[in-house]
Image 1 (tube, one colour):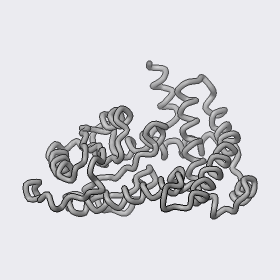
Image 2 (cartoon, helix red, strand yellow):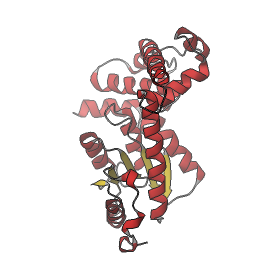
Image 3 (tube, helix red, strand yellow):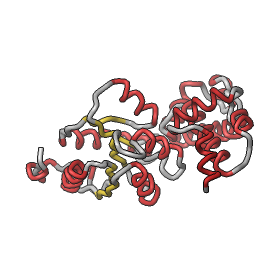
Amino acid sequence: MHPSAIHPHYSAPLLNGLRVLIVDDNQEDRALLMDFLGLQGCRVYLACDGQDGIGKATAIVPDLILLDVNMAGCDGMTACRLLKANPVTCAIPVIFLTASSRPEERVRGLEAGAIDYVVKPFDLDEIRLRLVVHIRANRYRATQAAGSPGVDPAAGALDTRLFDTARDLLLARLNETPELATLAGSVGTNPHRLNVAFRLCAGVTVFDFLHQERMKRASRLLSETTMDVQAIAELVGYGAGRNFATAFRKYFGHSPSEVRQRRSAN
């Protein structure tokens, strides 16, 4: 579908003013999405590859990122992991753009932190509807966490308190993996309710949050200190260096030793 075929009555009021970063190395695809989303009232920003996308996402902090999977250099999977590891960009929803419909690629993308996939060639109405669905979901979670009008204020305050208290306990002992029931009991709730609080406040489960924080702490230590890799692995809960290296590569797309090599080169 060409942008000229899109009529103003297709616009979705919920998308008006939404800041969307499009990261795609195909100029025609970037132009198509830019024209279409502009008609929806979105404020659109463009990046031509993964590294450019990371830089612009950090500077702009958009409301949502449309990220192509297959790009030269820094591909979409790597860019997504790096975005999710950065405290500035970790909460930005990422939707992958891909020409592949293989289930294994979709799984890899979701593991990297994406919330959805759109398959090329684009159906622009599908893109509009997917954006609306995810923006509604994000705003609902935000109102739940903040106790906005229409939502029980006590429930919002409880979610925040449970999340803040459990988060502090997890961050204080990143080398330990607590039983979920034990952690929930220590903050005065049950496992299911604690996971609900984490999903509302952080968008992930308790143990997904713990994994993300371990990887982010490890990345900082590798980049900013001279600590031995094995010592860093143990500090973030990995007794075996090989297991740590595997988890780190799966999360970031590169190994701990590569981080150290880049640090030495600089």
